[in-house]
Image (cartoon, rainbow over all chains, first blue to last red; front, top):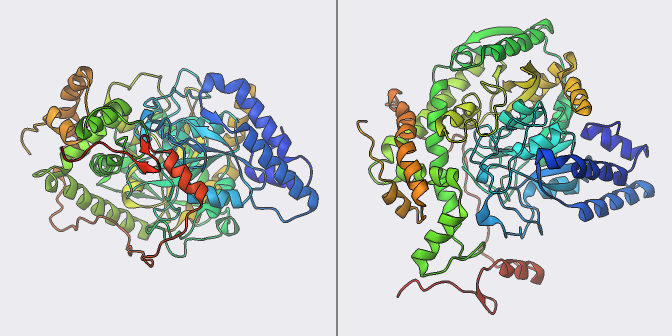
Length: 485
Length: 97
């Protein structure tokens, strides 16, 4: 297989160099042969994907107009609904749930010719940073199978990193796309809050959740994002004028770009080797003509504790609907007993932990001290970032304070696990776009560079990521290393 | 904010969620350190900051209150998800004894 990106695959199918059927067969065979040791997929949609590929090939033969993702296989995180398929959000409580409608992103990607190839493993309801809280299986980091892939979109990320798909969908509430993308050496983007419809995404924290692409190049991220983006009558938080043709705007030129580098992103518990790699990456942009401005975001250390109030608060409310009454497994007994058993047996430990935190901080007498306080801190963090972004174009730093750690290493230490999202939660808290792009290695494990910009400036973070990828070969290197594995 | 009391059993009951003895023990051990971590927020002075629920302006989306047709296949798909049913109706435990 000579094509690695969505754009290459699409163009090769369009020109007749290859067929959608050959592409889908290649990936399905690869998944079958290699996913046993990675554990990225919960299920593949072999028959359906091949039937869809034949349809695309028929369109090519007939000379019909093709969608912008015609024939491109996409893996989908298990919390995004595809009509007729199980969507379990990595939880036992939804083991038997079949989606009865398509998420808006699925409808839009399908119309563009994408082929959904399977659903991927994830931390239960997105609660986790290592994909170890899934009720089904552990996913391994394709770079080193003893390591976690990060999370919660660990299955989608591992699928892209292992070369099982060119593109996968993830969701990011506090870093769930960018942190695993960093740990597995792929590009992962969280769009501006409201850029992409959340209709059909199983909600974790509704004021923070965004669906975004995982892929190898910033250009692929631009393409997939612009197809998914835009106002949706089924999600009142989607933004007006959000249908931006990002791929047409890419300048790939950082001359004169003002990069804000916050000192707080290099203070709290960062691996010094990661700091070196990230500073070197910033130097690459400086060589391209960008200017570095040292900035301070003094509230950075409060983004994570604010997140661990807002997110469990919203999650406890969102997950109240899972009680085995209308779908799922009904537990025996009277109403109260049935609720307690269905939820007690259906939810795993981390989900229960967050429901407990959420119910506590929202309970009478505590809501002002915790929840309202967290909302005020969020407003303050947003103001700080907006202020900083008046004097710089983008803010750049590390995506994660560490490289991938050993499976089970942090599993029983929730606070240590939560701290792995220390640099990613700010973007969710403030609603701004952020991308992670591979920028090197520490101990043979990938490191990610995080690029953030103001609300609505999704094209800007992609443009800088794209310029960085043009100037470096980390991405090519990652692919080669994977092929060699 | 002083001592953090976290009554695990009471909160689990509010969440209508049974816990195993093992989970109970783990949470009784974990919760104080998690609450201590998130209580860091009390250090931030927010006396002049508004506690906004959404950062961006949002408007309610309205539509006419009209019945929309659902295909028989979609209706059946929804009914198929019912864990217990009588005919096409969802069966639930009695709410009032």
